[in-house]
Amino acid sequence: MPVMTPAELMVFLDREFPQAATAGMAIEHLDDRTIRVRLPTSERHLRPGGTVSGPTLVWLADVGFYLLILAQLGPVALAVTTNLNINFMRKPEATSLIGEGRLLKLGRSLAVGDFTIWNDGKSEPAAHVTMTYSIPPGSMPWAAVL
Image 1 (cartoon, rainbow, N blue to C red):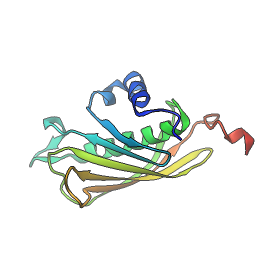
Image 2: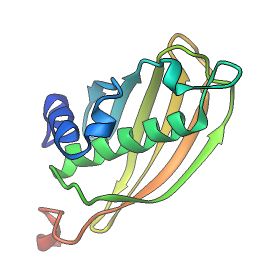
Image 3: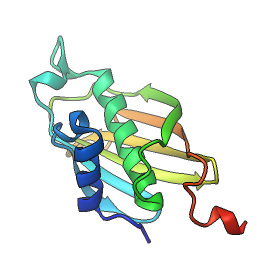
């Protein structure tokens, strides 16, 4: 069971990372191992040719997975990305992006997962991301009993 709700996560994001909170991303689903987020795209997300930029896709995956980790740990602002690999699979259209993240492992010091991004209404993904986050010491409430 997540320890933070989608509303609490968005308040935390707004307080700790206001530059991310203003992007319009919304959490559509959250449970122990998965998250689904939506990002409406606008002109600021586009690169020449009208496609959504790569940095926008990386940002969506990174922030979405960060929120999934925080949902399990609580408000740990210093959890940081240690590795992120993205495969751009299709040209993302200038429509809302849907991102789905999976937490594959949550350990004492690392969280590992993946994130897939689609255009809303499309069945084929635009990008697939694998990532690892470093968890600050003392952030795991159950680690002391292991």
